[in-house]
Length: 151
Image 1 (cartoon, rainbow, N blue to C red):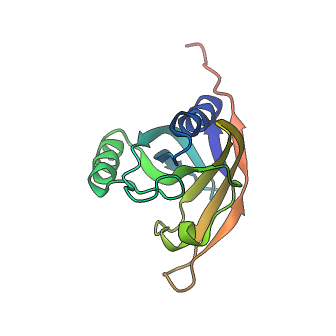
Image 2 (image 1 turned 180 degrees about the horizontal axis):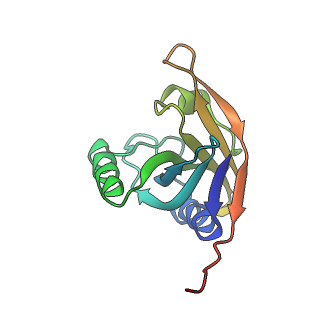
Protein backbone atom coordinates (compact mmCIF):
# COMPACT_ATOMS: atom_id res chain seq x y z
CA UNK A 1 0.00 0.00 0.00
CA UNK A 2 1.12 3.53 -0.77
CA UNK A 3 -0.06 6.24 1.62
CA UNK A 4 -0.21 9.73 0.14
CA UNK A 5 -1.27 12.87 1.98
CA UNK A 6 -4.04 14.57 0.00
CA UNK A 7 -1.77 17.58 -0.63
CA UNK A 8 0.89 15.32 -2.19
CA UNK A 9 -1.71 13.44 -4.25
CA UNK A 10 -3.10 16.70 -5.60
CA UNK A 11 0.39 18.13 -6.26
CA UNK A 12 1.54 15.20 -8.39
CA UNK A 13 -1.70 15.31 -10.39
CA UNK A 14 -1.32 19.07 -10.92
CA UNK A 15 2.26 18.50 -12.05
CA UNK A 16 0.95 16.20 -14.79
CA UNK A 17 -1.58 18.80 -15.86
CA UNK A 18 1.01 21.58 -15.94
CA UNK A 19 3.38 19.69 -18.26
CA UNK A 20 0.68 18.40 -20.63
CA UNK A 21 1.06 17.34 -23.44
CA UNK A 22 4.45 16.11 -22.19
CA UNK A 23 5.05 13.59 -19.42
CA UNK A 24 5.91 14.95 -16.00
CA UNK A 25 8.13 13.07 -13.58
CA UNK A 26 9.27 13.24 -10.00
CA UNK A 27 10.38 11.44 -6.87
CA UNK A 28 8.33 10.23 -3.88
CA UNK A 29 10.09 10.77 -0.55
CA UNK A 30 9.03 9.28 2.77
CA UNK A 31 9.38 6.09 4.77
CA UNK A 32 9.14 2.34 4.26
CA UNK A 33 6.77 1.19 7.00
CA UNK A 34 7.20 -2.01 9.06
CA UNK A 35 3.95 -3.42 7.64
CA UNK A 36 5.32 -3.30 4.08
CA UNK A 37 3.51 -0.13 3.11
CA UNK A 38 5.15 3.16 2.15
CA UNK A 39 4.21 6.56 3.52
CA UNK A 40 5.02 9.55 1.34
CA UNK A 41 5.82 12.80 3.13
CA UNK A 42 6.49 14.88 0.03
CA UNK A 43 7.32 14.83 -3.65
CA UNK A 44 10.23 16.33 -5.50
CA UNK A 45 9.07 17.35 -8.99
CA UNK A 46 11.74 16.95 -11.67
CA UNK A 47 12.10 18.32 -15.15
CA UNK A 48 11.66 15.73 -17.88
CA UNK A 49 15.17 15.34 -19.30
CA UNK A 50 13.95 13.24 -22.26
CA UNK A 51 14.79 15.24 -25.37
CA UNK A 52 13.53 13.01 -28.18
CA UNK A 53 9.95 12.12 -27.15
CA UNK A 54 8.82 13.86 -23.94
CA UNK A 55 5.18 13.31 -24.92
CA UNK A 56 5.50 9.58 -24.21
CA UNK A 57 8.79 9.09 -22.31
CA UNK A 58 10.42 10.57 -19.25
CA UNK A 59 13.91 10.70 -17.85
CA UNK A 60 15.05 12.03 -14.50
CA UNK A 61 18.51 13.55 -14.70
CA UNK A 62 20.81 11.27 -12.63
CA UNK A 63 22.47 14.31 -11.00
CA UNK A 64 19.04 15.54 -9.87
CA UNK A 65 18.25 12.11 -8.47
CA UNK A 66 21.49 11.98 -6.48
CA UNK A 67 20.83 15.49 -5.15
CA UNK A 68 17.25 14.59 -4.14
CA UNK A 69 18.41 11.37 -2.45
CA UNK A 70 21.16 13.18 -0.53
CA UNK A 71 18.87 15.99 0.67
CA UNK A 72 16.17 13.48 1.59
CA UNK A 73 18.57 11.47 3.73
CA UNK A 74 19.56 14.66 5.55
CA UNK A 75 15.87 15.10 6.46
CA UNK A 76 15.44 11.42 7.38
CA UNK A 77 13.50 10.60 4.20
CA UNK A 78 14.07 7.80 1.73
CA UNK A 79 13.17 7.50 -1.93
CA UNK A 80 10.08 5.29 -1.78
CA UNK A 81 9.06 5.72 -5.39
CA UNK A 82 8.65 7.74 -8.52
CA UNK A 83 5.77 9.27 -10.42
CA UNK A 84 5.06 10.31 -13.97
CA UNK A 85 2.12 11.11 -16.22
CA UNK A 86 0.68 9.51 -19.33
CA UNK A 87 -0.75 12.25 -21.55
CA UNK A 88 -3.88 10.98 -23.31
CA UNK A 89 -3.10 7.39 -22.29
CA UNK A 90 -4.28 5.17 -19.42
CA UNK A 91 -2.69 5.20 -15.97
CA UNK A 92 -1.21 1.78 -16.71
CA UNK A 93 2.48 0.90 -16.92
CA UNK A 94 4.01 0.34 -20.34
CA UNK A 95 6.69 -2.11 -21.44
CA UNK A 96 9.11 0.84 -21.48
CA UNK A 97 8.08 1.81 -17.92
CA UNK A 98 8.95 -1.69 -16.71
CA UNK A 99 12.20 -1.85 -18.68
CA UNK A 100 13.37 1.44 -17.19
CA UNK A 101 12.30 0.69 -13.60
CA UNK A 102 15.20 -0.41 -11.40
CA UNK A 103 14.33 0.55 -7.80
CA UNK A 104 13.02 -2.72 -6.35
CA UNK A 105 10.50 -2.30 -3.56
CA UNK A 106 9.61 1.20 -4.72
CA UNK A 107 6.27 2.49 -5.98
CA UNK A 108 5.74 3.77 -9.49
CA UNK A 109 2.76 6.11 -9.67
CA UNK A 110 1.19 6.95 -13.02
CA UNK A 111 -1.47 9.60 -13.65
CA UNK A 112 -3.38 9.66 -16.90
CA UNK A 113 -3.88 13.22 -18.12
CA UNK A 114 -6.57 13.53 -20.77
CA UNK A 115 -6.80 16.79 -22.70
CA UNK A 116 -4.91 18.54 -19.91
CA UNK A 117 -6.93 17.19 -16.95
CA UNK A 118 -5.73 14.51 -14.52
CA UNK A 119 -8.19 11.64 -14.68
CA UNK A 120 -6.85 8.52 -12.96
CA UNK A 121 -3.87 7.83 -10.73
CA UNK A 122 -2.60 4.30 -10.12
CA UNK A 123 0.40 2.84 -8.33
CA UNK A 124 2.51 -0.20 -9.08
CA UNK A 125 5.17 -1.75 -6.84
CA UNK A 126 8.32 -3.06 -8.50
CA UNK A 127 8.95 -6.57 -7.23
CA UNK A 128 11.58 -9.20 -7.96
CA UNK A 129 15.25 -9.63 -7.24
CA UNK A 130 16.90 -8.72 -10.54
CA UNK A 131 16.25 -7.50 -14.07
CA UNK A 132 15.21 -10.98 -15.22
CA UNK A 133 12.34 -11.56 -12.80
CA UNK A 134 11.21 -8.01 -12.07
CA UNK A 135 7.55 -7.14 -12.48
CA UNK A 136 5.01 -4.53 -11.51
CA UNK A 137 2.15 -5.47 -9.19
CA UNK A 138 -0.91 -3.33 -8.59
CA UNK A 139 -0.62 -1.31 -5.41
CA UNK A 140 -3.43 0.35 -3.46
CA UNK A 141 -3.16 4.10 -2.97
CA UNK A 142 -4.58 5.40 0.29
CA UNK A 143 -5.07 9.16 0.21
CA UNK A 144 -4.85 10.34 3.81
CA UNK A 145 -5.70 13.61 5.48
CA UNK A 146 -3.06 14.73 7.91
CA UNK A 147 -4.49 15.78 11.23
CA UNK A 148 -2.56 18.31 13.28
CA UNK A 149 -2.48 17.52 16.96
CA UNK A 150 -2.55 20.17 19.65
CA UNK A 151 0.39 20.27 22.01
